[in-house]
Image (cartoon, rainbow, N blue to C red; front, side):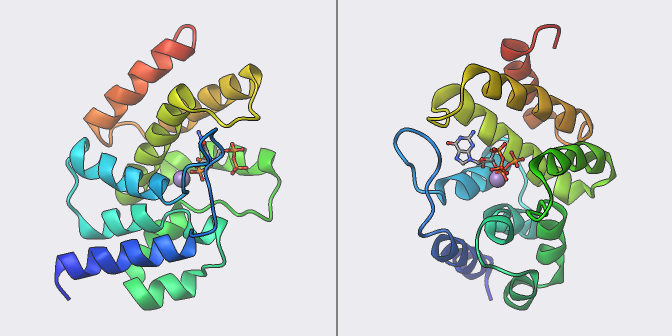
Amino acid sequence: MSVAEILIKTVNFASTKHKHQRRKDEAQTPYINHPLGVAYILTSEAKIDNIHVLQAAILHDTVEDTDTTFEEIETEFGVEVCNIVREVTDDKSLTKETRKKLQVEHAPNSTYEAKLVKLADKLYNLRDLENSPPVDWDENRINQYFNWSKQVVDGLRGTNEAMEKSLDDIFKRHISCA
Ligand SMILES: Nc1nc2c(ncn2[C@@H]2O[C@H](COP(=O)(O)OP(=O)(O)O)[C@@H](OP(=O)(O)OP(=O)(O)O)[C@H]2O)c(=O)[nH]1
Ligand SMILES: [Mn+2]
Protein backbone atom coordinates (compact mmCIF):
# COMPACT_ATOMS: atom_id res chain seq x y z
CA MET A 1 0.00 0.00 0.00
CA SER A 2 1.16 3.56 -0.70
CA VAL A 3 1.61 6.07 2.14
CA ALA A 4 -1.52 7.86 0.90
CA GLU A 5 -3.55 4.64 1.00
CA ILE A 6 -2.29 3.79 4.48
CA LEU A 7 -3.16 7.23 5.86
CA ILE A 8 -6.65 7.27 4.32
CA LYS A 9 -7.31 3.75 5.66
CA THR A 10 -6.25 4.97 9.12
CA VAL A 11 -8.40 8.12 8.98
CA ASN A 12 -11.39 6.09 7.77
CA PHE A 13 -10.95 3.55 10.60
CA ALA A 14 -10.74 6.27 13.28
CA SER A 15 -13.68 8.28 11.91
CA THR A 16 -15.86 5.15 11.81
CA LYS A 17 -14.89 4.23 15.38
CA HIS A 18 -15.50 7.73 16.77
CA LYS A 19 -18.65 8.40 14.69
CA HIS A 20 -21.05 8.63 17.64
CA GLN A 21 -18.72 10.71 19.84
CA ARG A 22 -18.64 14.46 20.37
CA ARG A 23 -16.20 16.74 22.20
CA LYS A 24 -17.38 18.28 25.47
CA ASP A 25 -17.38 21.86 24.09
CA GLU A 26 -20.40 24.11 23.54
CA ALA A 27 -20.53 23.32 19.81
CA GLN A 28 -20.36 19.54 20.43
CA THR A 29 -17.62 19.27 17.85
CA PRO A 30 -17.26 15.79 16.27
CA TYR A 31 -14.65 13.86 18.34
CA ILE A 32 -12.66 12.91 15.23
CA ASN A 33 -11.54 16.56 14.94
CA HIS A 34 -9.30 15.88 17.97
CA PRO A 35 -7.20 12.91 16.72
CA LEU A 36 -6.95 14.50 13.25
CA GLY A 37 -5.86 17.78 14.84
CA VAL A 38 -3.25 15.94 16.92
CA ALA A 39 -1.82 14.35 13.75
CA TYR A 40 -1.86 17.77 12.05
CA ILE A 41 0.11 19.36 14.93
CA LEU A 42 2.72 16.62 14.36
CA THR A 43 3.10 17.32 10.61
CA SER A 44 2.64 21.10 10.54
CA GLU A 45 4.30 22.22 13.80
CA ALA A 46 6.52 19.36 15.01
CA LYS A 47 7.62 18.54 11.42
CA ILE A 48 7.17 14.80 11.96
CA ASP A 49 6.67 12.58 8.90
CA ASN A 50 7.09 9.14 10.50
CA ILE A 51 4.03 7.28 9.20
CA HIS A 52 3.71 5.05 12.30
CA VAL A 53 3.68 8.09 14.61
CA LEU A 54 1.06 9.83 12.44
CA GLN A 55 -1.11 6.70 12.33
CA ALA A 56 -0.81 6.29 16.10
CA ALA A 57 -1.88 9.93 16.54
CA ILE A 58 -4.97 9.37 14.38
CA LEU A 59 -5.80 6.18 16.32
CA HIS A 60 -4.65 7.33 19.77
CA ASP A 61 -8.08 7.50 21.48
CA THR A 62 -9.80 4.59 19.67
CA VAL A 63 -9.00 1.90 22.25
CA GLU A 64 -9.46 4.22 25.24
CA ASP A 65 -12.79 5.67 24.10
CA THR A 66 -14.45 3.19 21.68
CA ASP A 67 -14.91 -0.60 21.33
CA THR A 68 -11.61 -0.92 19.42
CA THR A 69 -9.13 -3.54 20.70
CA PHE A 70 -5.32 -3.59 20.46
CA GLU A 71 -5.67 -6.87 18.48
CA GLU A 72 -7.76 -5.03 15.89
CA ILE A 73 -5.19 -2.20 15.63
CA GLU A 74 -2.35 -4.71 15.26
CA THR A 75 -4.19 -6.71 12.58
CA GLU A 76 -5.17 -3.63 10.57
CA PHE A 77 -2.07 -1.45 11.03
CA GLY A 78 0.78 -3.60 12.37
CA VAL A 79 2.69 -4.06 15.60
CA GLU A 80 4.66 -0.76 15.49
CA VAL A 81 1.51 1.39 15.34
CA CYS A 82 -0.21 -0.83 17.91
CA ASN A 83 2.66 -0.46 20.38
CA ILE A 84 2.59 3.35 20.20
CA VAL A 85 -1.20 3.38 20.70
CA ARG A 86 -0.75 0.99 23.64
CA GLU A 87 1.73 3.38 25.26
CA VAL A 88 -0.62 6.37 25.07
CA THR A 89 -3.78 4.52 26.14
CA ASP A 90 -5.07 4.98 29.71
CA ASP A 91 -6.59 1.95 31.44
CA LYS A 92 -10.18 3.10 31.92
CA SER A 93 -10.81 0.38 34.53
CA LEU A 94 -8.62 2.37 36.96
CA THR A 95 -9.91 5.38 38.89
CA LYS A 96 -9.42 8.78 37.29
CA GLU A 97 -7.02 9.74 40.11
CA THR A 98 -4.84 6.67 39.44
CA ARG A 99 -4.91 7.22 35.66
CA LYS A 100 -3.78 10.83 36.08
CA LYS A 101 -0.99 9.77 38.47
CA LEU A 102 0.19 7.02 36.11
CA GLN A 103 0.44 9.45 33.17
CA VAL A 104 2.86 11.59 35.20
CA GLU A 105 4.88 8.54 36.28
CA HIS A 106 4.99 6.86 32.84
CA ALA A 107 5.81 9.97 30.77
CA PRO A 108 9.62 9.91 31.26
CA ASN A 109 9.79 6.16 30.50
CA SER A 110 7.89 6.40 27.21
CA THR A 111 9.47 5.81 23.80
CA TYR A 112 10.30 8.81 21.59
CA GLU A 113 7.34 7.99 19.32
CA ALA A 114 4.86 7.87 22.22
CA LYS A 115 6.27 11.10 23.68
CA LEU A 116 5.58 12.87 20.37
CA VAL A 117 1.94 11.74 20.37
CA LYS A 118 1.52 12.69 24.06
CA LEU A 119 2.97 16.18 23.51
CA ALA A 120 0.66 16.82 20.53
CA ASP A 121 -2.35 15.42 22.45
CA LYS A 122 -1.68 17.72 25.41
CA LEU A 123 -1.07 20.72 23.14
CA TYR A 124 -4.37 20.16 21.32
CA ASN A 125 -6.36 19.70 24.54
CA LEU A 126 -4.81 22.76 26.23
CA ARG A 127 -5.58 24.93 23.19
CA ASP A 128 -9.13 23.59 23.33
CA LEU A 129 -9.31 24.53 27.02
CA GLU A 130 -8.22 28.08 26.16
CA ASN A 131 -10.59 28.47 23.19
CA SER A 132 -13.64 26.23 23.73
CA PRO A 133 -13.60 24.54 27.14
CA PRO A 134 -15.94 21.69 28.11
CA VAL A 135 -19.29 23.22 29.04
CA ASP A 136 -19.43 21.69 32.52
CA TRP A 137 -15.84 22.47 33.64
CA ASP A 138 -15.53 25.24 36.24
CA GLU A 139 -12.41 27.38 36.69
CA ASN A 140 -10.99 25.05 39.33
CA ARG A 141 -11.26 22.00 37.07
CA ILE A 142 -9.65 23.88 34.18
CA ASN A 143 -6.78 25.03 36.43
CA GLN A 144 -6.27 21.48 37.68
CA TYR A 145 -5.99 20.25 34.09
CA PHE A 146 -3.35 22.91 33.28
CA ASN A 147 -1.33 22.00 36.40
CA TRP A 148 -1.55 18.25 35.82
CA SER A 149 -0.66 18.63 32.12
CA LYS A 150 2.48 20.54 33.07
CA GLN A 151 3.55 17.65 35.30
CA VAL A 152 3.08 15.20 32.41
CA VAL A 153 4.83 17.49 29.90
CA ASP A 154 7.77 17.95 32.31
CA GLY A 155 8.33 14.20 31.92
CA LEU A 156 8.27 14.43 28.11
CA ARG A 157 10.89 17.17 27.64
CA GLY A 158 13.81 16.99 25.23
CA THR A 159 11.59 15.46 22.55
CA ASN A 160 10.40 18.24 20.22
CA GLU A 161 11.39 21.88 20.55
CA ALA A 162 8.45 23.42 18.65
CA MET A 163 5.75 21.63 20.64
CA GLU A 164 7.50 22.16 23.97
CA LYS A 165 7.83 25.90 23.23
CA SER A 166 4.11 26.17 22.40
CA LEU A 167 3.22 24.24 25.56
CA ASP A 168 5.46 26.48 27.69
CA ASP A 169 3.77 29.60 26.26
CA ILE A 170 0.41 28.14 27.36
CA PHE A 171 1.71 27.22 30.83
CA LYS A 172 3.09 30.77 31.28
CA ARG A 173 -0.37 32.18 30.60
CA HIS A 174 -2.12 29.90 33.10
CA ILE A 175 0.26 28.77 35.82
CA SER A 176 1.89 31.28 38.14
CA CYS A 177 5.69 30.76 38.26
CA ALA A 178 5.65 28.52 35.13
N1 LIG B 1 -9.93 20.17 26.51
C1 LIG B 1 -10.95 19.42 26.09
N2 LIG B 1 -10.87 18.05 26.23
C2 LIG B 1 -11.92 17.30 25.78
C3 LIG B 1 -13.04 17.91 25.17
N3 LIG B 1 -13.90 16.91 24.83
C4 LIG B 1 -13.33 15.76 25.16
N4 LIG B 1 -12.13 15.96 25.75
C5 LIG B 1 -11.24 14.91 26.26
O1 LIG B 1 -11.34 14.91 27.68
C6 LIG B 1 -10.11 14.38 28.23
C7 LIG B 1 -9.75 15.23 29.42
O2 LIG B 1 -10.79 15.15 30.34
P1 LIG B 1 -10.59 14.46 31.74
O3 LIG B 1 -11.90 14.55 32.47
O4 LIG B 1 -9.39 15.06 32.40
O5 LIG B 1 -10.21 12.96 31.42
P2 LIG B 1 -11.07 11.67 31.03
O6 LIG B 1 -12.04 12.08 29.94
O7 LIG B 1 -10.00 10.73 30.59
O8 LIG B 1 -11.76 11.20 32.28
C8 LIG B 1 -9.05 14.43 27.14
O9 LIG B 1 -8.74 13.07 26.88
P3 LIG B 1 -7.39 12.57 26.17
O10 LIG B 1 -7.33 13.17 24.80
O11 LIG B 1 -7.38 11.10 26.29
O12 LIG B 1 -6.18 13.22 26.95
P4 LIG B 1 -5.73 13.21 28.48
O13 LIG B 1 -6.25 14.50 29.02
O14 LIG B 1 -6.34 12.02 29.15
O15 LIG B 1 -4.27 13.16 28.40
C9 LIG B 1 -9.77 15.14 25.98
O16 LIG B 1 -9.46 14.65 24.69
C10 LIG B 1 -13.09 19.34 25.02
O17 LIG B 1 -14.04 19.91 24.55
N5 LIG B 1 -12.02 20.03 25.50
MN1 LIG C 1 -6.49 12.54 23.04
